[in-house]
Length: 606
Image (tube, rainbow, N blue to C red):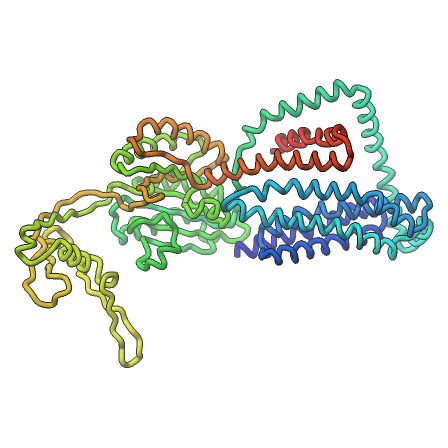
């Protein structure tokens, strides 16, 4: 549903942009023939770009369509300039054939340089790495292929169509006065009214030229002062996408049985219904605990680690308000209503999930090292600090260290006397508590229907309710069907303890993760404050351990670094390209001098 709606939205916006572009061309050129010629080049350029993308193995997706939608407004430049120059020669009294040849020839090189300059701007996209490379390179390819096709058609198809459709001014006026008189009158009135702002612009330009020194100083001051706005603009890897879905993860106190987790989940859903009315909810899906099958586990979220975990997927009906407001309200209500339960809102849109590399949060503070006990002390201290960072929410440790456990200390002497080994004791305990399906799978074939049913031996959970009942589990030599049985309690001592609920590794080394998300603030600003706290915590680490910030933050910093380097390279390449065209170092510098003003305008708009 999300993919269909996203693609439909991009296609709709592209069609709207194409229609508006055609209307603007008709409004300023005042000729339906010229408008038709220019409009023909747009779908042909888009189609050519799609063919080139298909040859490279790309598909029609949100990024390629986004690139084509971005290029729609630019595609008309080459054709518009060609038609305008041809019209200018026709109005000067040249024959149609000569006007087409002269008009097209005059602008061949300038439009070629302009097209190459636009394509060069997208060079930084190809310097990206990781997931960003696979996302943004198709967008850049779509734009570049469309621009190259647009230039090709403006040099071939547009002059050909002009030869068949364009008319001399006198003939065109007579035809327009008949069937298109209203259009001609409207365009003439528009041109008359447009002369006023054109005259004002002429006066402003004359004043700027007359006081060029003062104007340049004011321009430079405004440009450089606008740089101070950049820190306030914020940094995000990708704009938030509202898919109408909310993903909520809850973690009850470690060691909670799954039955209790189910009850907590039901209460949480009732609380959600008090915030989001049921009539506004399209669907609610619960996943409680960890999947039994290892195959299902590979497709599951990386957040659940035991029966105390649950995921709630809530889908809102189409047209219901933005999910961000509901998420902020639910975050406050749930944390106040369920003390002891940890809540976190996971990314619901596929784009954020990709940029997070499968992690349940955009910020992942990893404490890496073999000294887990010392690292956990640092992790617990560090967890309290990020919670004070403005805009940082849902901070939690992925690997709890208080999972209830029962240690069985086997007395080797007694085990040997009984003809057993520690392996025998461990295997018997594993089968009794977890079943034999994983270690010794067995199946029974029903002769009536030919269906195989899995058989599993396991002690019922309700029979294991105390250390005494656990001590009464029989232990035999693994793999033998005969021999004396010994009780677990006679072979060793049992004691209660706690342990780490899940063990995670990164590059073989044990790791502890602090996951966190953002709310009401940009990811870059939050990451900057978190980095300061991480730098302070590094001094407390034991030797051999390290702290690294990963997740979407790491990808964003790497991608932005590549884009910044590529942007500088693109500007230099565009400048050198114009130097070759103009055979001058000064003229391209004058053209490039408009870039600071553009960057200043971007800063103010952001």
